[in-house]
Image (tube, rainbow, N blue to C red; front, side):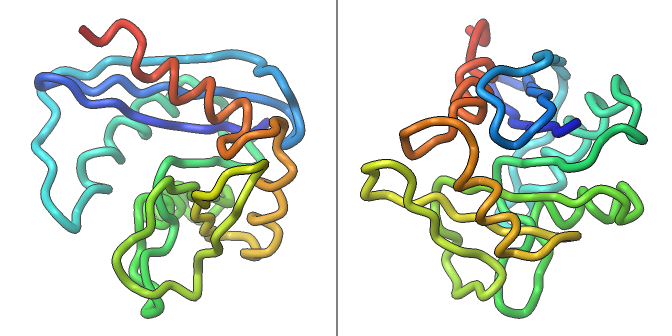
Length: 169
């Protein structure tokens, strides 16, 4: 099973959503799971992972990790040419390097990054930025490229983004 995570912050809360599916090319999910955590810490520049990791790890407790073959996160796995870990990298380490992680970011981190590739999907003029840890970057790039959908955001990642923002007012 593949899991994709995203978190939306509002007030002092964080809503984390997970879309689970069987194959990278699936159009529909098996399930959509969410959790709201209150009292989330403020964002610290350069330490985004410290805010989001507890949210993802908490929601991951609802899954049998033995059946998870891949996790996709909204963000980077590796941030720069020096190999500085991003959210995906820290998650990979927290999971004892047992589950490969693909990071899919909507904006470019402000440094050169040989560990990330631009991916133009559909007719979009704006790329997604794909990075990975625990699997080859080309495999990760092709996986996101092959995901269902004709637009910049793959269908299930768009569902994830939408569900994350629902009922947060």
